[in-house]
Length: 273
Image (cartoon, rainbow, N blue to C red; front, side, top):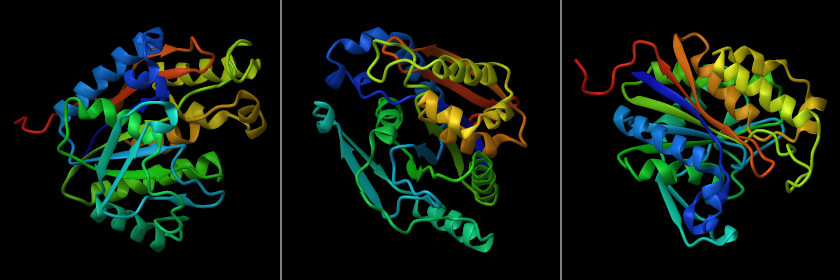
């Protein structure tokens, strides 16, 4: 029926209080922005949230959509006793897979390697669940295919959404560069700040086509995480009149975190006349 909105979010595990144990206060702007978009999603009341995550099952030449009825995961690997669960929208998964097959597009639900929710999915759901739980999930991994192929996948997802009766939001999970500071866990590369500045500018200017301008060797040097996730989202709204809002950007640990929303300019929440 409608794509109600799309969102860019980071996924640092320490943002979960049980993991961060106080360290999360160093990214308070990110936390506040996360809570703001969670409130927005709760007000939109989507039937299904589509999450694109760099840490779901990834293949070089194939987009993996997590199959099944239900999945859960936890933060024990990060030192936190927190569990997140999700019910999958099997009908939407089937419809995306069917259209991909008709178009000979490399996407589907075969080949899952780990059915547990990854932290790139759990972290946005953790915040959303604080305010809203009445939704299903579709979890989608990235691929090693071209940036343009990720844009094409976003358009395919949007065409499926347009053919169905329910309401949806897309949450594009991903950090920016991991090489912003010498003292950071991954060190510094000059490409890191350039990458972040370019992505932030594209969001602020509502000009997501610029996300396709990066060269692969540059992206490797920048040690980026979420670009392909953002580009799938960009494909879904490319032909729509959406307005962008950068809620926060910061990188105190040497990794860039951006939170942004993209909402229809004539947006109406469910229940509006």
